[in-house]
Length: 294
Length: 277
Picture 1 (cartoon, rainbow over the protein chains, first blue to last red):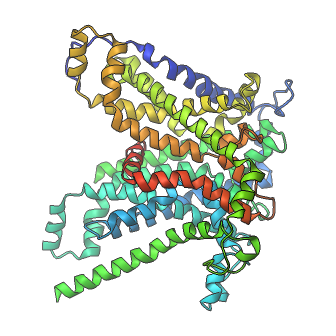
Picture 2 (picture 1 turned 180 degrees about the vertical axis):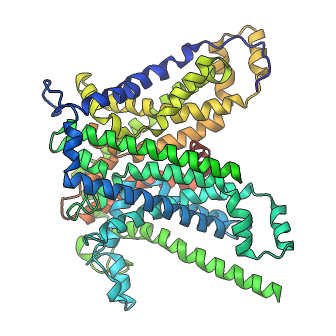
Picture 3 (picture 1 turned 45 degrees about the horizontal axis):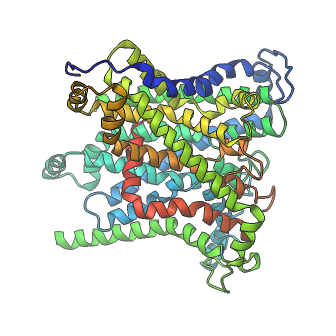
């Protein structure tokens, strides 16, 4: 809705700097990427061959990539659900005149402003089986049985990394939920409590259904970020032990820049894009529908 | 009766929040304390209260890693990129917000699509392009990439804000004979301050903290950013913690200080960026 304006038409020349850069460094390489995924380019040699679907077929029996693919999905789902649940918990704890709200809000949010690489190193140290604080604290509490080789254990390593990603992302979700909670009309709660609904029932029947927009944002961006996982893994485990914590990004990076298989790496990048694209579309349609129903 | 239960409830709530915040404050505490310890002192000391503090870690790590250069590189890249992101983003948003034709809708959509494309898709062709333009291992190259990648979110934020601004000021300026360039710089740009602040914060944090682009395009000693410099201290199987922690502190400190003083703006800036979903 725009009222009729006497304003002269703003010339499109204003778009040019942004558009030219965007076309050149974003759109053009995106289109080219479809081509490179079908070649055997090694990153250096100017001559390379068109190999059809070979890169993609090769990935089907590449154990390392398959481990990475599975890990990436687990990581993305774990991160997305974990950070949304903890974010919602933080928001509910701090919501509604909690003393010290702004201080604790800043505390829970603080990992958001730090680099994931730095966070990864800090937690890698905390997780260290012999010198790390986690096991030291567990031992001094007499809980030596719970002390583990957090990043060295094949079954545990991925979950230890996911836990840190949740720790990092929960504060962001908390903010989104807090903003959404502020928009829930107070008289709805009054009506519910007159009807005799307890705190838990109020949450389930009044609050939760109205959190649709926040849930959509946190789940969609959580998955996109999770599927790109790179920094945390590089600083915590470098993909190890074995392939236990490899992600699509870490394998792709290694495939291109240590093994010089750029075509194969591009096929991985392509698969990641397709997965992100499909999951985002599914999530947006499903979640938006839910928002409207409410 | 009601009153006592609600007081108890608020105590329990406070206790839970306090306990949870320990999980958030402890890593920062540990980082700061351990950055002042030698490798031997770190052993089995979760709270780091034993032994003295050694600022020599900082001195050693700083000189061994050329960290001053890395700080300069990170600052240069972040500041230049963010300035152009704001300028080009605001310029592009002007016609997109003020015109209603099909082309304007189409262009807006074209930029928004960029929000779901991961860098990983573009990486290989970009690597080739940067090589042939001689922009690989160059700060200019990475700056151009950050500006381009920053456009989708920035244009989305600027143009939605601009649409909410009344047009009367621009109309008045036009009657006074101002050109659209004059209107943009003298009237519109100053009005954009609140969103520009959000964009500045979001993009600065993103670029300062980014590891993926610099590790690919700026991995030589003299060009690397703080993130790559920290990474260069890590080994395949073990890390040189006594030298890494001081570097991590220096890499986190600038954004932490900004956060402590400007947290209100940073939080609201990031909130407005969150609507991109």
